[in-house]
Length: 142
Image (cartoon, rainbow, N blue to C red; front, top):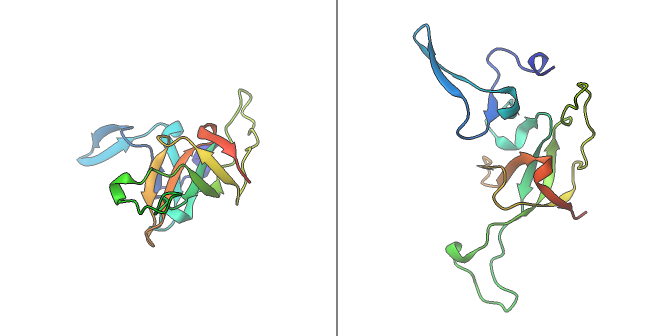
């Protein structure tokens, strides 16, 4: 099913630290498992990612600039945000019969996710994005 989506020369985004490096006819390549491919990137901007399977692309909310008491936070004191807006979703994971499972999140949902899950990216405009599996979404807030 995936191979019909990927064309030779397509740009893909894959998880960190995956794949096997090989030299094939003097050219370096990386063999990546299908499950480690996050999505297809048709431009040079992560916000245009088309996630595959159960992957979700989330635009991360900006970190709080000050505390509830009004104290300004330094960059190092800011907590890593774990709330964001879903901007793209894959079609869903495949079950044992090869059928696509429905995704519990949709475009525009505000979600809470695990702080240390997924892969972090910056878009061309400097916005923060994270890609993660839908199972790493802890709650749908709206």
